[in-house]
Figure 1 (tube, one colour):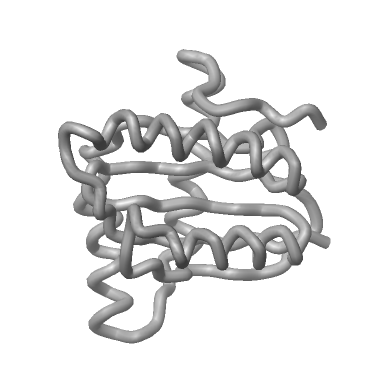
Figure 2 (cartoon, rainbow, N blue to C red):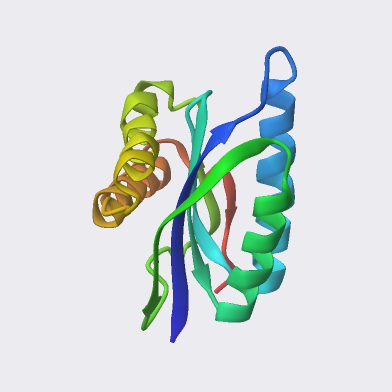
Length: 150
């Protein structure tokens, strides 16, 4: 069994350093995820992050502690956390979909809904989005990030 966790957050990154900082996040996360046997996908919308992480529970806990301390974003909000029997992103240590600003409203609505209702319920919708984007990334333009060696 593995742990799956989906979170969204508000970006604290500003132009002109934004692109270089995202490159650092993708590079560092790709390497760290590979070491920790974590798979997943990341979306950056210029104002928000959305990410799914899958892997051994201890690895997910370690990553989330680091993510919550990271000053590059705020309002880290877990949308879904559950056990899964196998990786759903087995091809990726990190699939990154760059400059997804057209999805910003969708991610912002998730954060606003959690703030208003106190309970996230958009996990399945975000999972579908991550899977669709990861397939498109692989099929159309090749990986950004690093495919897993599994």
